[in-house]
Image (tube, rainbow, N blue to C red):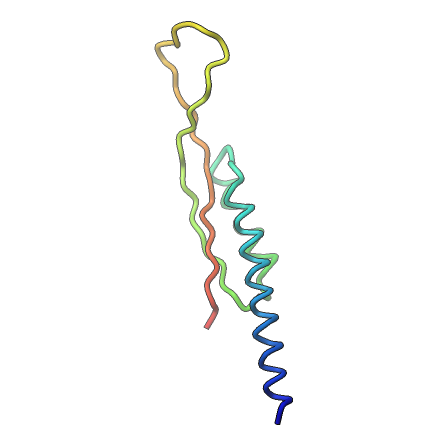
Length: 97
């Protein structure tokens, strides 16, 4: 009678551990800045592919953000100072039903 309860507790503990590991790896991915959108999507797909056997669904989006560069030299900035865009991923972990 205790055996099914033990198995259920072990299963819940393993699922929680797996979710925490996924959230840690996705949090690290969310801090990486990419130069182009295709690199960011490729990194997100790589994480999805590596964790395809997990019981959690990984979803995400790629967004472009303008990066403000600090000036290296003193003086007036150039007239056509274009701030480059960087791409970041916004991954999420969902329980696969």
